[in-house]
Image 1 (cartoon, helix red, strand yellow):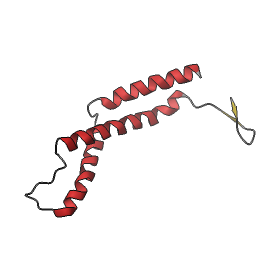
Image 2 (cartoon, one colour; image 1 turned 180 degrees about the vertical axis):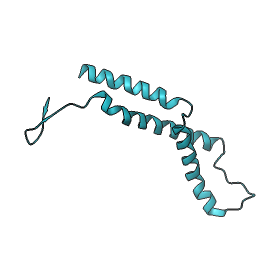
Image 3 (cartoon, one colour; image 1 turned 30 degrees about the vertical axis):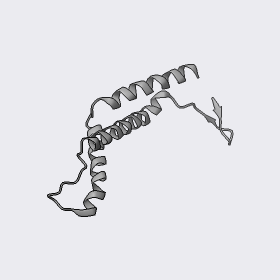
Image 4 (cartoon, helix red, strand yellow; image 1 turned 90 degrees about the vertical axis):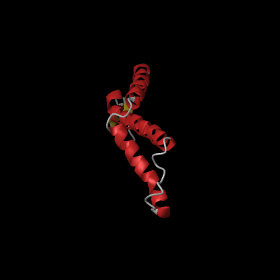
Length: 98
């Protein structure tokens, strides 16, 4: 038990309280990975047929980011779940030994 500044008792957060944040972090990491994969695949490259100019080039990265986020939210390639499981395991070890 931890005592707060005003003398009230604070309870220690549990591993379950951190799970939504861990899942979000894992999903964000997968989205970053997918964004880089999409860029490497050339999906954010502008096509000469549209002729959108500088604006099209600048906003292509936003489209790639949105696509990567949606792919990760839809299950992605399973990387987020693997990362989440690893983080959760380490968090449980911390709470078991702390």
